[in-house]
Image 1: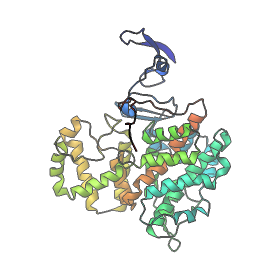
Image 2: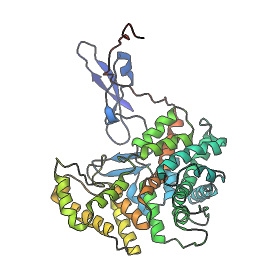
Image 3: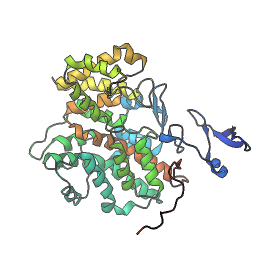
Image 4: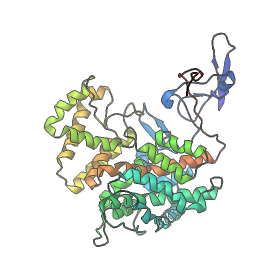
Length: 426
């Protein structure tokens, strides 16, 4: 609601009156859209002070460590809900009734298989290709296999595409892993829940079907919930920007996967394991803690602190408990996991980290859990993409359901003024 006004005063010009918009939560927003009429626009690299859209999906208060999906705290969803119910909530705005959830789960299960011809598509990739490279290509190619639901102006087409993406991402992720391992790809099983089915397709083979551990399936489901959406981050903004051009949903999600691939975004939990490799052993922790405190040393502790959360990451509390449960279930004696737990203990008690709110974040614990389950680090960001797909598609659907404009950021040009080519050129 625009119930207040702000004035922009530029020396020598009449004041420019700008509406101030108020949301249901969070700071007020100054609407600068009319500024273009003055021949000026704002400069905000990284969009640190710019709201690119209006949204009803997710709210974050980084100072207070709050993350809400459709108003529900992430801690409550992780403890009392499951991933597919959270998907329904993000996509539809409300929690489902028992009947609505059963129908939704049934629809997802009916879409878990991929077109059989898609298996041949994998053969075009090298066996040692990074799984995220394969994911970008395969998800983008889905539009060539499912072109019966690509009319973005048709609400039914948008709904079918959303269901297909949520349902097929675990299958494609597992196929990507199996391809890199040289193992036969496993078909999904509709008698398993979402997380169990993913673990089945990842770790079972046609000659040996092992039962899925309930503890590991629960941990996997929580990882999915905790990564389902995170407001207007780089990959979600990429999906919205691609969608604003009218691109099909599979292309938009492929664009999101490409943005997520960056180590500053989705690659953070993979970077945690790389950091643990660099530290090497518990005996080296003090040396690397000192390096982390040294402003002149480039070494950084990965998985501590967060760009958005200035207090604590609310997802990390849930993930810490899940991490403890998984390690207890598996009884793993892994030096790297021992190192991670020691690092966690030190960072939680060291005044340097406490004063700066450098607590372990969700990436720190999720990396440890995934390694313990047996998932290679190259697959970590793939699993992040799998979980985040529902957030991306929810934002894509929200954008298309109301008037929108193609994204077109401005720039501050600092290059040459117009100049002529030199005369006498051959």
